[in-house]
Length: 268
Image (tube, rainbow, N blue to C red; front, top):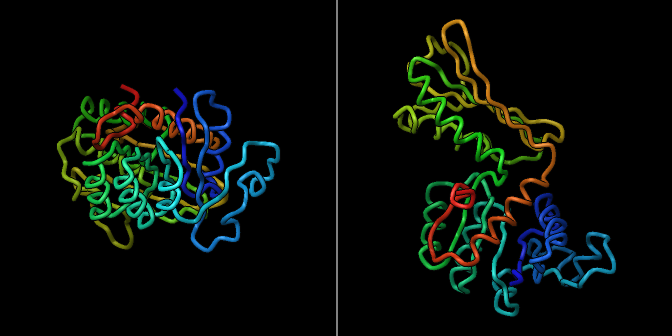
């Protein structure tokens, strides 16, 4: 059965990657796409905006609620901003449409809004959609358990200069994976160090962020022991794997009952 897909922010970096990848999937059809309110592209063909003439015409809209009311949609994919994602989640819940969210930088209150929407529709939220990151997450948990609290954990993440949130959602997830395996609370996460910091506290997990150039995304988890260290690294070469993961999630989510899901659910 063909999945009818709508993409939020279709002209953004991730939006374009998802649109282009979806066009290669035999069991999917793009039926809707949105841009920011007030965009000059609102009401114009997506194919013209992407300079890909000859494809099935989809008109860009600047309001997801209007799109959902006028078009039959099975799933929406959203990689936008925290505040916009919260609004989109409420709109999808009202329209009874599944939602895949890759937005990062959400506050606890905004995550709560997603949980509320997930009581009405299937909703998947993941800070990183790549399969490799999901495997890295499992590896971090296993290594933390096996190495124990005598080994110190540090995380370094690198992204392009346009990324708005820091640390990345993926880095936070990896830190929480390690903390959970070690029985540590989230209060043990250290986002920055500056000045005279003294001896490193036991049980602390540090997260450092670098920004520059066009780096799609790199994450390294360090385990420091006495006289040795282990490093686990994932490097994203393009946004293609994120787009593939999001489409895989949308395909999986379509037949699921209301609830909040993650990429681990998809892979299991």
